[in-house]
Image (cartoon, rainbow, N blue to C red; front, side, top):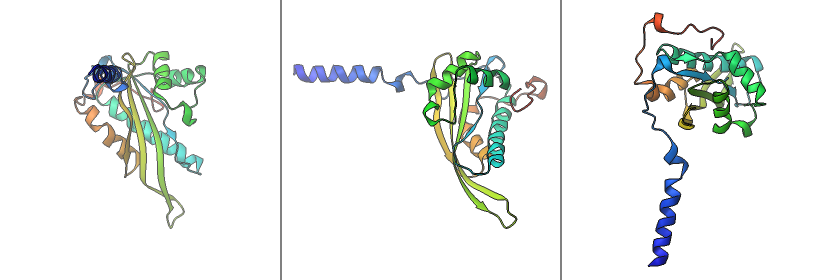
Length: 196
């Protein structure tokens, strides 16, 4: 009996300190006008050979992220501040070993963000069309949305496949952004160069 009690107590202790218990629910509501979002530069992990096409994909992902948060009245950390923090911290998100929540939290803290958003494009089926251009469907991506102040994931490497990258971003973030109404244009932060 004593052995059973020890095992039960140990199981309870393990469950009570597990990472899942520290995660915040996805339905946590933020005040967009007071919430600063750091959108980290998207990374192409697809192995795409065409560097220009890869850069366009990453830019389209980041543009879609900005649009989705901007129309709901969220504030943004300037891209230059994010890039400076990444450089100062010696982070390279193209290195698979550095794509960890702890690394993303460190950037968020460095730039005083409330939320950090990061997207990794993981797969892209490329087929060359008859005109020489690439048709890029379907795609697979992973998205992280992190609450910096509580150091907890709202969404951690949530994956989506199919369609193009902006459509996949929309699909993944749909439930998270559902509680936030679209605000009038005069309440939306003006964003330049993809992130202010």
